[in-house]
Amino acid sequence: MSDADARRDVAIAGRPLERAERSRHAEEGAHDPTATPYFVLEDLLGAVGLCEDSHLLDVGCGAGRVLAYFVDAGLPGRVTGVELDAELAAEAAAWSARYERVNVVAGSALDLPLAGYTHVYLFNPFDTPVLEAFLDRLEREAVGPVTLVHMSDNGEWPAYLGRDGWTVLREGAFDLSGAKGDCPQHYTVRRLPKTGRA
Ligand SMILES: C[S@@+](CC[C@H](N)C(=O)[O-])C[C@H]1O[C@@H](n2cnc3c(N)ncnc32)[C@H](O)[C@@H]1O
Image 1: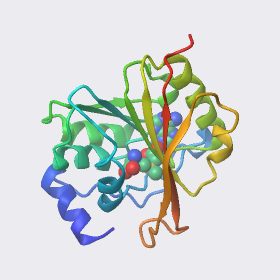
Image 2 (image 1 turned 120 degrees about the vertical axis):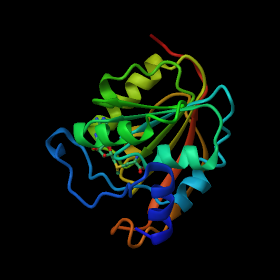
Image 3 (image 1 turned 30 degrees about the vertical axis):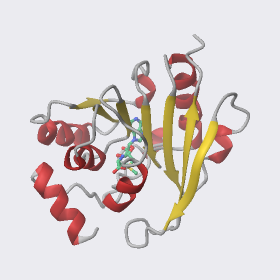
């Protein structure tokens, strides 16, 4: 983690938010709680078109780096982080409690009602079977257009194959040497324009 990122964490959250530990939930398909660097969030979420009516979901928020960026950047709307690891969720909830447009839910993204979210961010949260189940639920439950930003080592792309209606708006890669060993990390911004099918 860069010193600048750690300072930004401390300014908003009162503590560094990067975690070097391994996931305690690997058997459930969970990945390690690596935080997205701020320069990536500025590029991806700073330009994703959030407005006062937006509700951003960070899928697997870890200790809350995306939530801290949301506050620090003064982004409009609301943000919710959902985190499977109870210790990480409690930490994110503790520091973010003072920010009224930030909310943290402890539990699996597969159990979270998804209606109402306008934007979804995923940084390599889980294995492909979990991603497929999550996308199935998002397609069923979304009540309006959803913009989804997905960053990973590009292993996620088969989960999107054959899904109707998704449009790729933007894609590329970031060199995350030092932040994530297996760089570069690929990102895709996709839009699901249709409403829920349930
Ligand atoms: C790579 S970290 C990303 C952290 C944060 N979103 C960021 O970008 O800084 C992925 C996180 O997803 C969490 N996770 C994995 N499976 C999950 C699930 N089913 N529901 C909620 N969170 C999950 C992991 O515990 C981990 O903290």
